[in-house]
Image 1 (cartoon, one colour):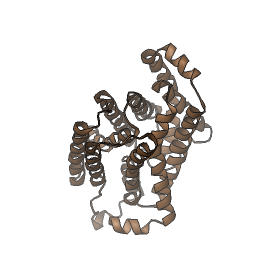
Image 2 (image 1 turned 135 degrees about the vertical axis):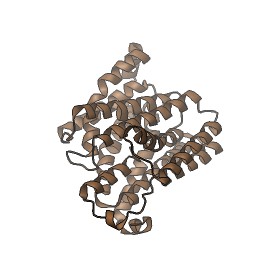
Image 3 (image 1 turned 135 degrees about the horizontal axis):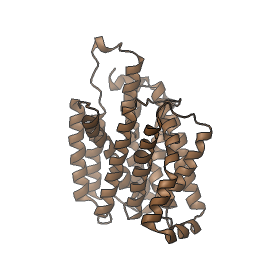
Length: 323
């Protein structure tokens, strides 16, 4: 099934839902920047995931071992967002942060090839090359307000996310909202985050900063937490996984690339943070690389009936472009 056929088969309602979720995820970066002011980043991560973890009351436990749950929690949640929030607290703009985080797709392909012996396809190899080139252009042409260390932390966040992707993929977690789905794994792995995040906050930010941050909690911080935990994590994953369950992944996953566009546009409109020419050009190359890497080779007729399990695996692999 080619991309044009996939797009035509997607109902208009599902296209609007995909655009909505991608927009929520993109605007999330501005909301994080707005709500974190005056609050240490690692403390803010602990608060966010404490709220997400409350959903274990209604979301069933994933059908996977606790080692997987802990691994995903440490890398995909604590590592990714701890590094991301810290990079933004050091001055990285929400738009550039959202863009750099897309490097997780490139890192996931490379790590999967090394750890899972998954041989990259030709489109994936080209996509990785374009992604690396795009990151180089962003690094060289970034604006003067983007500290090099903050950029490195954002890329480390993307790498941490990619490690979580590989852990999840090795465990065979499939897309969906049931007991084996990524939503269940996201919610239950949130249990791993708050205590280590608080410990790291105490070690690197200090007890005084934690006390000051708790005293600085405001309605903005509360609203930001509800947005990131409720709309982006719980609502966003539930809707997106439902879209993947009803439609071909090739028709759904590319919508996620709206997220950095929305993040950059909203940061420019609301925060006056206009991206540099190098960031725009490099970002375009990086996004193009992610798109190319997501191209699926046309299946041979004999391989068209390999069973439902293989179809689910392909959908799960495509989902890794979203994290």
